Length: 144
Image (tube, rainbow, N blue to C red; front, top):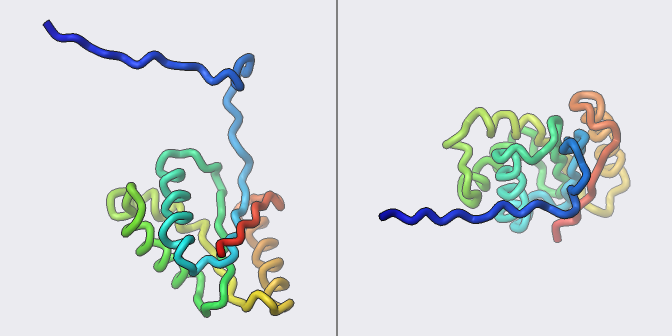
């Protein structure tokens, strides 16, 4: 005799009465301190895992801001290396998912006390709004 144990499905009481699941609008995650350890070990791997699970909206974009002089491509490669090392879902296992995720990675280099750097960031965010349809939806995160 084989016993099959099943876990009952528990409905989320906050979703009671909702007929459709809402898809979030495209947005930008502005990451201050993007080259730091927290971003490499925790934040980017976690965001990539959400992307693998299809829990991020289409057009989701990350703009990193830090002092190290990097191009967008250099930043993407650093993030790929970190995600490969620290995430449970590896880019090498799902290259098409990584490619899609990486299209939304951008970088602005500046010291934190330089007003011109924030102007560059503003320009990059306007560019991203046009290219990725993020419409000014932004989340600012200071990774210190």
